[in-house]
Amino acid sequence: MTVHLKYLWDGSQPGWVLKRFCGNYVDLSLAFPTTGPSTRELMAVRRTVAPYTALPVHEVVTQLRGQESLLLGRFEPKEARLVAAACRREDLNLVESIVDAPEFLPMNELTGVALIIEDDLLAEHVCTEALLHGIPVRQVEF
Image (cartoon, rainbow, N blue to C red; front, side, top):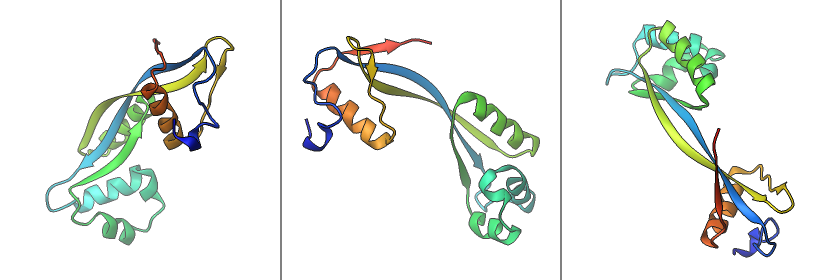
């Protein structure tokens, strides 16, 4: 166990398991021609994509000129449907990719205590260490 992680979990107490939650996420991006987005597409992005709605037109043009794609982000399915619908209404070329990204939650089955770590990178390190030390994994079905 890495020394700096021991204050969170060191494996010395009995009853610890990793609860494995399978979450499906959707990666969304926009595809443009090799020459970059057209004027119509630039205006549609400005109307639709949150970070660009507050920018002046010339900034949107500067940032997207010559780009073949624009990553919109990773979304939970419900939010992805809303974002995708808005893009389709603007006739943008949307690319959707389903991602099965499991998430782990350290939990003590004897005490009912869960170890909530808000820092995603730190949580990943703790769970990786736990897996390396043979902590049992329990699949959680929805």
